[in-house]
Amino acid sequence: MSDLARIVISVALYVLLFGYSIISLVEPVDATEPLANYPRMPAIDNAPPQVAAWSLSPTVVVCQHAPISQIQIKSAIKFWQNLGYTFENVRYKEDPTGACTSDRPWGYIVIHLVDKKTKLEPTALAQTHFFVDNLTGKINWATIRMRPDVRETVLEHELGHALGFLHFNRIDHLMNQKWEMGGWDSLGLRSNR
Image 1: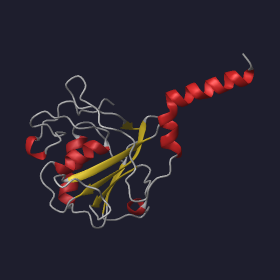
Image 2: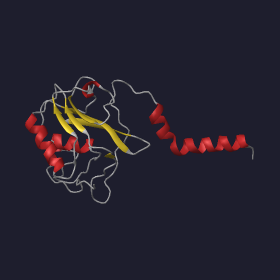
Image 3: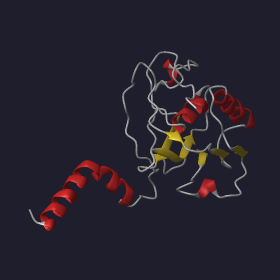
Image 4: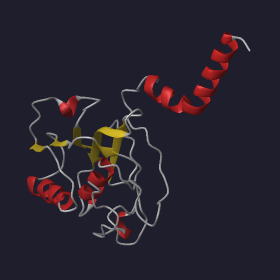
């Protein structure tokens, strides 16, 4: 077999095996769509799936028009800290680095008010997208969009997504997809660090 044939076969196999990663790295991003690259996954071992984690502790920024009070963000951060997670900093309605206006806020969890561009299901209370680096498997940034009427557990739930957790449809669990069926159960959410 010639060297050219080996190269063509190698490239074809690489594209078949890793094509999704290549496409997700080079595909242009639509400015109106939030950036995320993880599909939904089923629960594993009777616990919520955590598809990725942050390599460094993120900074949380509550943007100017986000419908979150200082008490709400402090309480939500404390909830996750009690489970072993750390945050570099929490900024409330101050954004000296421009994370709130960036479409790639590296190192940040950014919290916004839902806007007209956000494609949110009518029954959804909020939406979170996180971006995982295909090479490192670590979360680079996350954006949370909240409706104006923030209900109990919703901010903690969305921070759970920003920390890499997907839905876990166990009754009374924080990561339950349906708010009415959720609660404060934190089974499987403790940090492994």
